[in-house]
Image (cartoon, rainbow, N blue to C red; front, side, top):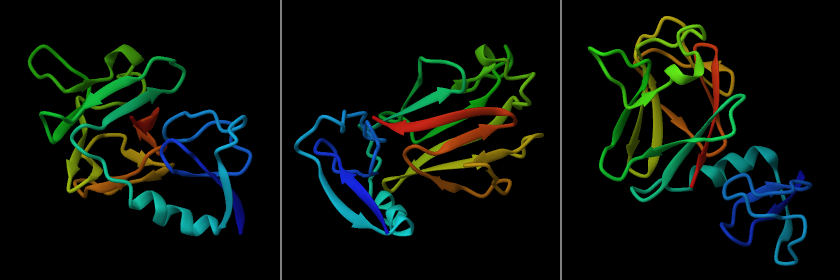
Length: 163
């Protein structure tokens, strides 16, 4: 069992000792409103699976080594393509500004989709693979992604957060 702290702002169960909430960034260390409880770390994933990603939620994608996140907006679209944009073919999330070609990102590398309150990433038969938390995902098989997951496109690492 691990002791966790519940965020008073978004109610996420954070591991004890965390200074800020993993989901919303709320400062936990000075908050008298947080409460602690014992939660099996394996059970924690069940809690995060119940978090719904709605059309008004924004996905923030932080590229490793960069401070400013990419804002992925699902208000008007349910599917966004990720890759390297070229004049003949665009993508919704262009990773060219992050040395994408050198990092092994394909032109049409992956897609991120929202369906029934969950987000999925699908590898579009990329040359260097798509990874969730270090595990390569199968080609053309949508995989659920969660708040605070690491997504890697080739060798380009990102971290995603719900906002």
